[in-house]
Image (cartoon, rainbow, N blue to C red; front, side, top):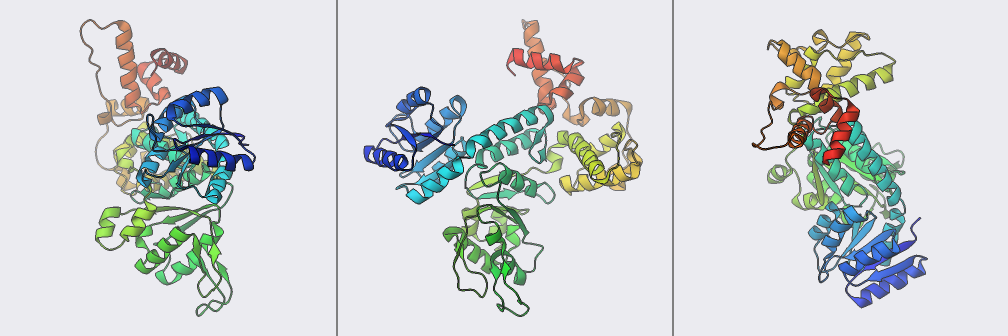
Length: 465
């Protein structure tokens, strides 16, 4: 429950009016006219939420947000008057929770504050997930220890608590819907509906009805009223997959609804208001889709307030071992089967195969292999022919993959130190290099270095890695 709020604004009139409004709503309010003073107030009064202007003399709102991210992580709403929307988005990337345009509309502020009641809980959940990521490479429904995936996790963490629209790009099968679901699960809307629509899977003539609903008699065959996905996702999240496949006329209607948050069902007169966060995805290059006339430019900019690009599996090979094990165990749990692990030779083939269908193709291959293995270890004979390939395997390859889970070409073979380096310098460099090879996975690094996991944790702590 929010109680004390810090208001930061160099304009006395704005600061005082916000303080009076918040006090009427029952909040305890402290205020500051500069970023420097705000930092003092934070340590003195320990507010549970902060409202700050972006453009101020001395320490700007952006600088204040960045400083608070490390020193005092609390929900922050940035207020943008002279600043642009791009500046507000930058503040959110640095850790702000949301933004409001000035002059502030009381109704919008109240809605954001109500949503921020849950943000403290979300911050705790994020801290838990970061712990899982460090220990097991898990972030919500996503898995990965590679640098590209860690970047995706960080972006999700930053934007999830806000109300910003998000556009997710990535090849088919990379897990764009899992990213969208994780965004929803880490947002204040997580107790409401997550509604997903695949725009490429529904005929253009039916997609408008699917999204906005229709009244009885709106068209031939409309024998009953239908509630559309926008209505179903009220106060929740609507995920529009393959948005660039949507008909251009429907894109224009969607743009208007996104701007006004109001719409009518097909054949209806009633104006319906829906508070919906829209997350969209496309497997096309958005800029190229615009050039080809598949994606309206104005809709692109409306959705692309914040963008996340999911890397293809071929660019995150160090995640293949973890994903394959996860898919095998998940399939075994669902079916009541058992799995004894994955043979190193099979793992080598998985790592070298380019996976044009990405994680979805890997999942299908592993589930098939788990079924065929009948509870035994997954071996080469259980993999699809395309994955097995013709390249011969040698003992060094098998040993390297068994120890590290990485493809041989991904493992650096040496650490260079200048003359005069101490033993501690050498140890620090060796541990740092090994952690880089394993994408930060301490368990794999410990195996490579031949030490216990406890020793690895102690060394990491000792050297501040």
